[in-house]
Length: 242
Image 1 (spheres, rainbow, N blue to C red):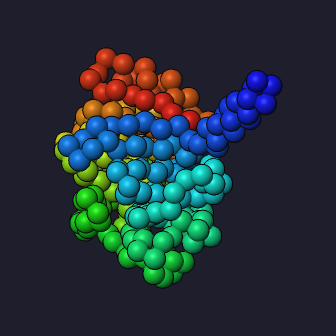
Image 2: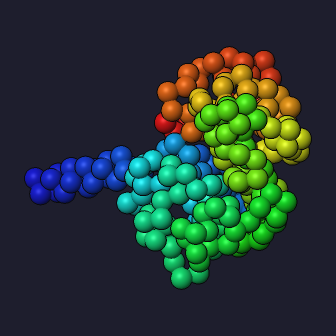
């Protein structure tokens, strides 16, 4: 009995340690099965649909990857260090892995495929639409936006009957406000690089996603966004993505 008790304690401790190394996970039901969304941290996400694994802006400094599966598809929005980690990409790559990225990332990962807004690709049972991501207000210096138009990408993933929008580093640009039929949206919310809570709320009120996750939000007060969208039909979900 004593040995059995010790075994149970060890198993419990191992399970706890494993869970502590895993990011939070939400599930969204689609006609193609459940989509598991892993909130790794900052701008890094992982989606899993069946056995198909999608890593989005995988960066080791954003969170723990030790117990996460390798990628069937890697999506990189742009080349900044907090969105593109070439060493981690090497460890996540399988022989059949497909990586889609903006053109500026291609020099660092030459086996990837560069895509631009307006492009559409299919990988597994996932349709990927490329959309713009850029600043219109916030600048590094006069005339030099943090994210110039035509450089970065956002992505819309269609899985079954659901559409998932991962915005990348952007502001509430006209192309975002014109989006249709978005079920789940990930919008960045940190200054001076992307949006304020009011800018996120402004965009969300225009294209009306069913579920909104702020991400890439650093020390931004997420409660402000919750208050701004309180009396709407948009469900704001806050996850640990600092």
